[in-house]
Length: 409
Image (cartoon, helix red, strand yellow):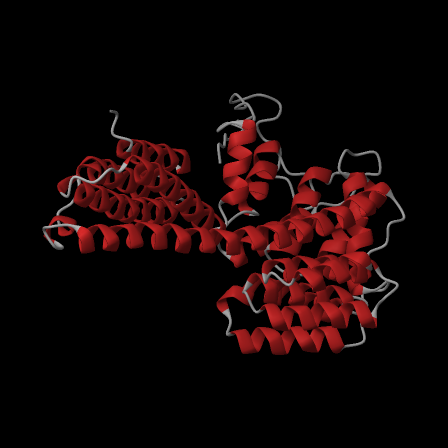
C-alpha cells in the first residue's frame, strides 16, 4: 500500500514553492576654434547681456542640478540675466523648476514662467509654463502677496522627514490655519504626511478638517479619498465605505475612484472573514493531529519516545524547507517571513502526523482512514498558514497578480 503520509509532505513542498536610472548624457556642440588671423579673431568678448553660447547654456543647465544651493542660485541668476529675445526658453524653464524644487522660491519661479509665456509664447515649453503659473498663483496669490507662506510650505515639504514630528505638525497646522490661498493645500499635505508616517488617527482628523473647512474646493474631494484610503489601511471598513460614499460622481473618473474604494472595503471585509477562518482551520488541524498523537501514544506499547524522534516525512522535508527559507532571505526578502512561517508550520504539522502514524504502526493498528484524515488536516493547515502569512505581510495581492499575469506582468 502506498504510504499516504508522503502526500502531506509533497503538498507542503508545493505550497512553499508557490509562495515563492538608466540614464544617458547628451553630447553638446562645441564652438569651432577660430583660426589665428581670421576676421573674427579679435572680436571683443561678449557682455553679460549677450546670449550665452550653446556650451555655456548647457553648463548653466547642468549647474541647476548641483548639490550646492549657492551654485544653483548663481546658475539661475545667470540665466535670468539674458535679456529678451536672446533667452533660451528651455533654460528658463529649467531655472524655474530649480526655483521650485531646489531654491524653494515659488514666487521667483512664477515670475520666470511668466517671462517664458510673454517672451517665448511659441516655444515648446510655453504651455507647460502656463500650467505651472496657474498652479503657483493658487499658492502665492495673483500679485505674489502670499509668496512667503508658499515658500514656507515648500521648505516644510522639503525638510519634513528630517524634522521632529512635533515641529512638522506645528508648522503644518499653522500654515493650514493661516489666511492665504495655499491653506487647503497645506492642510491636505499635512494629512498625507501624517498618513505616510503611520499616524493614522491624526491623519484621519486632518482629512476631516480639510473636507469640512473647504467643502467646495478640490482639496475636499482629495481629503475624502485620502480619508477612505487611510481607513482601509487600519481595516476600518465601515468608515472607508462611509467616506467613499460621500465622493462626487460627476464623471467617469470620479465614479471609478469611488467604486474602487468601495470594492476595496468589500474585499477587506471578505478577507478579514477568511483570515479568521484560517486561524480556525489551523487550530482544528493542530487539534486533530495532536489528539491523534495523544490517542496513539496512550494506546501504544512504547510510550512517548517514538513521538520524540523525527519521522521520515520531517527528515525528508526539513532540508527542503531550510533551502527555501535560505533562498528567500538571500534573494527574495519580501516573501522570506511568509516562507519561514509556512515552512515551520508545515514541519510541525508533518511531525505530529508522522509521529502519530508511527505509533499506530508500532502497535499494529490499522491506520488507513486516519492517514487520510491526517492528509486532509495537513493540507488545510498549510493552506491556512499560507493565507495568514501572505495576508499579514500584505503579499496576497502581489501573489494573486503574479498568478494572474505571470512574473513579468
